[in-house]
Length: 327
Image (cartoon, helix red, strand yellow):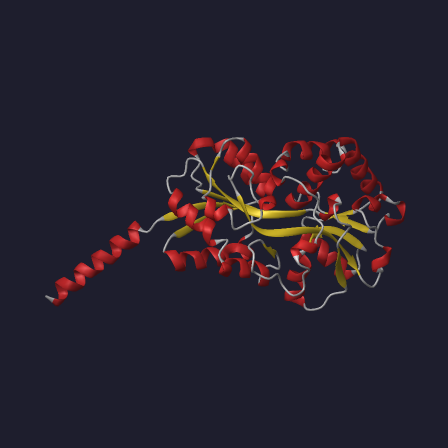
């Protein structure tokens, strides 16, 4: 009898394991940053998460190409531009109002098709041994001054940089964006593969200043201790003060929408928001969750008033970067 009971329990557990729901997520956020959160979500809900990691623009393009045949249920993007591209193509379904309402309107889709999960401010990181804070321009436009020749670093292939260029195009126009790119290029900036590489170069004294997202400095300090590098926030309303968001959207054709909605809701729970604040040093977007002590309050970062959904013209920005010889 005992043997029969053991066999029954074993079969029952096996069936339960086989029946466990699995979500497929295309993630433009890297595994080191968000892998632990997916693991916590699975522990809490029993829903397994199968993740395809990659760069946000490439994953957005893949999702558009795959169309209704995509295996993805959720798109977790590094920036609003990728989400906006899918929303405009009719590839996302509406999120529940209770999920959307947890986040300020400027950090979510006006149509309720995606929601921001954490905030990422554009800054100019600089080497504190080579540059005084008062020497830094108040506007990102000031870095075309020839006095910065040979002193700058940028990462033109990076999605967050391209989102900034899209912001510049929207706010100042194509001509001004072209002029800025040409001006920076004339200053012979060093080219790096990503934001982290720029911070490393700054810490070595290889460059004096670089265009990055704010949290890369804190991630580097977490790994290596104090560095001779600081973040400079440009003036309020400037294109260089953009606060973009990482965020999620649910694919229109997903057959696991209930589980997908649970993941979206989980990323806005206090546990996940505190994780973004304390572990990845991003700005939490849900009221009541404090940012890291090293950061200013999000309300004090003067991000320009801009519909982040409009940062979807990835192709237009890439074309401009190519036309100016930056890419």
